[in-house]
Image (cartoon, rainbow, N blue to C red):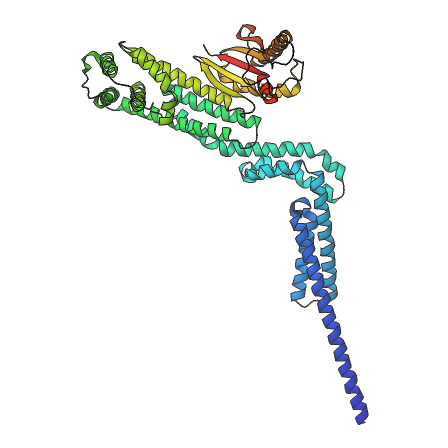
Amino acid sequence: MKRTKFSMSVISLIGVLIIGLVSVGFAQNGLALFEKAEMAIADADSMNAAVLSPESFAKAKDLFDEARKKETLKKSSKDIDELLNASYTLAKKAYETANVAKLVLKEVIPARSRAIMVDAPSAAKREWEEANNLWRKAVSQIEDNSLDAARKQQKEMIDKFQRAESEAIRNTVLKAAREAIETARKAGADEIAPLTFRSASDALNIAENELKQNTSVSERAKSSARFATMEGKHALRITETAKRFEREKAGWEKAFLGYEEHFSGIARRLQLDIDWSDGADGAGAQLLHATDSLRLSAESQLSLKEQQYSFLEQNYIQTRNRLEQELAQAQLRVAELEGKLGVVEKESEALKRAQQLEEKAKRIGGAFTAKEAQSVVVQKGTILLRLTGISFPSGTATVNQSMQKFLNRVVQAVQEVSSATFVVEGHTDALGDNDTNKELSEQRAAAVASYLRTNLALPASRINSVGRGEDQPIADNNTREGRAQNRRIDILIQTK
C-alpha cells in the first residue's frame, strides 16, 4: 500500500514537471512570435507601408494588437500564435508591396511629397482630396497586384497633386497680398491712389504668373507677393490720408504747408532762410543757388541726393546703398540744374522714370535664373534682356520645342512693357567665316523676333531683328566658355 502511494506521488511529480516544461516552451515560443511579428511591422513602417500599402499594413497592426490583448487576458496560446503568424505574413506583404509601389509610383511620390510640404491637405482641401482619392485607388490596385491599372493613373495623379500644390501656394503665398489689395480697393484706392494701387496689382500679377510657370514656392513669387502686400497697404494709407484732408478744416492747406516744410527742412540743413512769396519756383531757385557753392564730396553728394529725393516726393528717401548706385547720375543732374529755374521738378520726373525703368528691368530679370537671362538698363529708356539660356543647334536657326517653352517665359516676362519697341539681336562666336556667321545670326534673330511678334500679338514694325555676327563679343573667343557666352540672343526693349 505504501509502495503504491509512493508510486502515485512520483507519477504526479513527473506530470507537474512535464506540464511546467511545456508551459515554458509555449511561453518562449510565444515571445519569439511577438518579436518576429513586431520586427516585421517595424520594417514595413520604415518603408512607409502605411501610405504605400495601407490595407495590409493596417491589418497587420490590428492582428498584432489583438494578439497582445489576448495575451493580457490569458487567452489560448494557439489563438495568439495564429494571430501573430497572420500579422507577420501581412507585415511582410506590406513591406514587399511598398517596395513595388515605390517603383510603380516613383514619379508620383515626389509630386505628392511637394504637395504635403506646402500643406495642401489643409490649404487646398478639395484639390488634395481629389488627388489622394486617386492615390488610394492606385495603392489598392498595387496591393491587388494590378500594376498596369495603377500605372495608367500616374499622369492624372501627378497633375492633380501639382494642382493641389499650386492651389495651396496660391492660398498661402498670395493670400495676404490679395486681402491687402481688396481692402484698398474697397476703400477707393483704385481712384484716389491709382498709381500705387496699380503697382500693387502689377506685383500680384507677376507673382501669379510666376506660380503658373513654376508651382514650387520660388523666392520670386514670395518677393512679388510681399511687395504687392506692402503696396496694397501703402495705397490704403494714401487713400485714408486724402479722405482725412477732405474732411478736416483747412486740410489741404495743412498738406501744402507740410509739403513746404520739406523745402524748409532742406534749407535749414544748408543754413538758408527761404522766401515763400514767389511760391515753389522761387524756393527752388534759392535752393539751387545755395547748392552751387557746395563742394561735392561723397557724403555731401549722398546728402544732396537725399535732399533732392525728399524735395521731389514725401516718401522718396531710399537706402544709402541705393543712393551710392545712382551717385554718378546725380552728379550729372546736379550740374544740369545749376542756374536753371524750375529744373528740379523736371529732374523729379526723370528720376521717377529712371527708377520705374530699373524696377521693370529687375522684374523682367526676376523671371529667370542668372544662367538663363540678365536684364539691365543700358541707356535712357532702353532695357537689355540678354538671353543666355537659349541655344540653337550648330548651324541652324529653327526655334525648336524647348526654345518655344523658354520664349513663352520671355513673352510672359515682357508683358508689362508690351507697348515698347523691340530689337532682337543675333550674335555668334568667331569660329567660321565672318559672312556666314553674320547671315546665321540674322536668321536666328529673325526666327526669335517672328516667334515673339506672333505671341505678343504686335505689328511687324514693333519687333525688328538684326544680325551682329561675331562683331560684338562679350567674352574671349579663344576659350570654349567665352565662345558659349558670345553665342547669344539680345533683346533691346526701347520703352520710348
